[in-house]
Image (cartoon, rainbow, N blue to C red; front, top):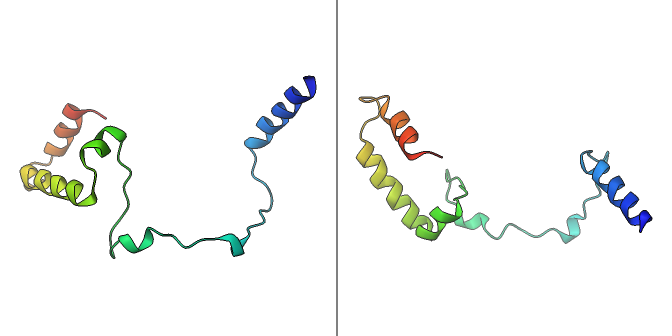
Length: 91
């Protein structure tokens, strides 16, 4: 039992350190199956679980964001508007 504790302590100490060299097995690598879904200039965004439950597709999320952009109007005319939205909605 004492040996297990020592081994766990050693692993925890090493977890914060990077190894000097990693052996990657490129023969076992797989192509990114999601890469084809992104159009040029697109970015990937991670949604919080509560938001992802409402917007289950990228089309739904994009449509909602476009409506929000339209509702906010031209931010140049009201530069503090975005700050007020952030303060009122919280993280």
